[in-house]
Image (cartoon, rainbow, N blue to C red; front, side, top):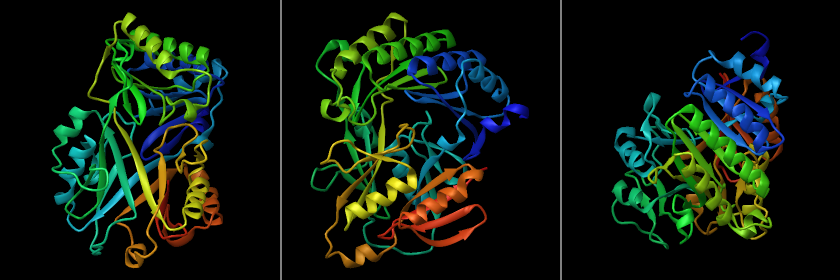
Length: 391
């Protein structure tokens, strides 16, 4: 890729770059130029920068040139991609369950992927190891009520009546979201742990104009809105809980901002797609929550939720899923000893993999095994993280 090659890394098989930006508005200027290059480029705009993913190297040089002209430097150290791996003795049996729960599409090698490439891929892999007890990791999935009903997972169980299990016993809490508020001015928005509105755009120009307008409104309010651009689509997202006053800690009512964003989208002719909002997070059961949480903060470069009572940790750029921790009953000795059927896989640029591994081990991780470009590490309670170097 010539001079621009240092901006880009291959991550999970995708040519990816991150460009630092001091505001949403300045990042939106780059996003606007990118959609004019190709409507197929995947763009994630954040208050601190912009991630760009290409299915080929065709537009890499043009994107890098535009970023340089706008004064937005590349920062490869910001790049990582988190996936969830599910091991099963019979993958074809469990796959339909997860496809319905997540509303994902089939990917390569038996994986399931988010069609709009926002939530983590689920990699379903063959295993011969029988592990009959409950995992210490499960998924939370939040979708609009119609999507939860259409998933058809059967009768739920558990304390909140939200839990479902696949034929192997892997669990998901499938949660129906709600309207953000009763105001008609926010009727395009759904509360799926995040506040999300998904708008269909009929042209790259409309997509660009909505992105620029949303960035300006969010910057004026001082709110770090998430703006994701996909082919024919603009997704506006608060980030988990960030529409709630005590979570964002700002002097604003997010529903007011949501109303202004909805007005801007409708004025530009964009149409809300009420079936698309989705939120996925990982939930860990731990005997020593503080120790396990501290490991994952360091290993993933995450930040703790600002609320003291909340155990969440999140990607500071809100590009990868939240992790949540709760105490497990320490009397469940066998369950705590059993290796999970679920683990986390973290793809990082190949030139940064050794540094990330060192950080992970220093945080209390135990290196279990390694092969070319892959390192399997256990946290203080045996939950596994596999660090994978690109490409």
